[in-house]
Image (cartoon, rainbow, N blue to C red):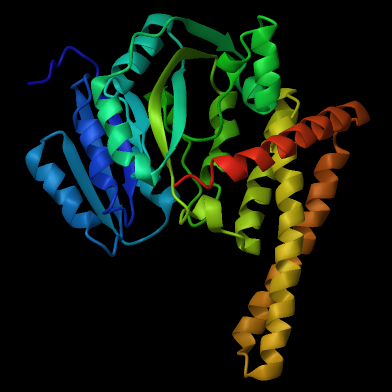
Amino acid sequence: MTNTAEPLVSIIVPVYNAADYLHYCMDSIVGQSYRNLEIILIDDGSTDKSAELCDQYAAADQRVKVIHQVNGGIGRAQNAGLDAAHGEYIAFSDNDDILDRRNIELLLHALVSTDADMSKARWRQFGVSQLSEVAAVAQQGAPNPQKTTVFSHPLHAYQTVFCKSLRILGDALGRKTETKYFNEANWCRLYRRELWDGIRFPEGVYAQDTATACKLYARMGTVADIDVNLYNWLQRPDSVTHNMRSASFYHDHVAASLKNMDICRENGVLPARSYYTLVSNNKYEQQAAKLESREGKENKEIKNVTPESQNDISRTLETANNDNRQTAKALGNLSLAQRAECATLRLIRLAEKFVYDREIKNMK
């Protein structure tokens, strides 16, 4: 029995073709030490046994609710979860990740005790070969955090605290820099429900989390950080994040970054992270669009290509050219000093990304 005096927490889990991993995720959620949960599974048109697994969990636990819908992408699935949620607090999980048993308990305590708008904790990456081991450790439950740190101006922190080497240096200098680090992911966070009023994810695009991040962080007053690992992020070689290289993928990140640059300008915040994302993805989009155009021309020479395919190629090039112009315009809105600082942080992050791609994305 749940204690109805405790606030209800809604956990939203978009599910798509995750039959091999879903039980690890769901076992970690239904086994949470905090019991007053509403667990919302959105089956986004799965073609494997994921839908059946969702229904099995709902039949076994009355806290689990399942929404079956035609495939519409993760943004649409997350929105369906937000629309269906009744909790005073909102959490998210990816369908192949593993929550520590005390995830909600500790995040909720940090949020309520500090009266922050969002609480967050630390996370770790792991490979497929470590699933059983990580699940066993997560089930034991994390220790109590050593400290809870509350900081203000989360939009500024999100935009400027993202280079690992500088976070290490900042901590060594006693600036508590690591506590201010968080990315655009929605997992390993606990939100007050009202933060999502009027905010939903864009649908049918990549980078839906990046497109929403600055809107959320701009309306937050404070964030509480606890120094304990509460979330385990599975690194799968077949994930979209690791493999997608199309021009449309990069375009969606460019579009999200351009909007975030505007939000930063309106709030007087240095858009260093958005600069990094914008410049990098604009470069990759230009390269991908040219490659797709060249491949289209080669295909036309050896076989019939439909007018529709040629139109798609033309639209891809037009979109890439327009994004290039919009990127130049956005960068032109920055002062020389701002551009220099953003460019320096980008170079540091690119060097770190080389190590990240080699060690983390290749986890087995």
